[in-house]
Length: 236
Image 1 (cartoon, rainbow, N blue to C red):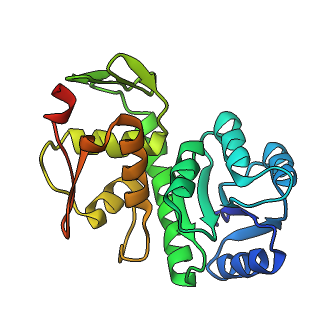
Image 2 (cartoon, helix red, strand yellow; image 1 turned 30 degrees about the vertical axis):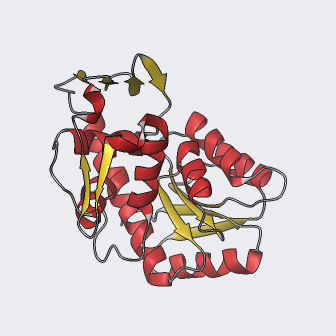
């Protein structure tokens, strides 16, 4: 019998946290709730969960600091970030701190379940990738250089802080130059998302974050279709 996946819900509105935990329990997960950032860090340190659902606005230590702590000490734990604000800066800050997925309150139980399921599928895929040999340890295109072994990105010679998920997205796009990829396809490949993509802005927020770090022109938006990497941009 398979061991149930353990999820830590970090939410200062305990009624909201309890509702999330109940929904997750109904679909077969073990879910626990803590109400502040310091308590979350202590719990994660002592008993690392398989996945964290993390609100940004927390008393004491906010969700961004909790995410940074997790990424430093528990890099394999997946993070789903929650916020009541649908703000671009919040989203970029969340992903920069290490969030893998992003949900804006209020969200439906269906979207929550789909996000958690996708996160666990992605965790399993990344575990398999870790044991595979990287056939291309480094790639350079114009002013952009990616060192896969060191998990580092360089833009015009300068190191750029980039999250593992952003690196996956960038890698996929640059290996298909000028090919327009829909949000649905990107979600399926990078985030292992199955089903309708209309309720999540995860791809869009990651694209904005990459643009903020590497320049607006690095990823083109083809309105109504999707996104593509522009190889000309990195040559200029």
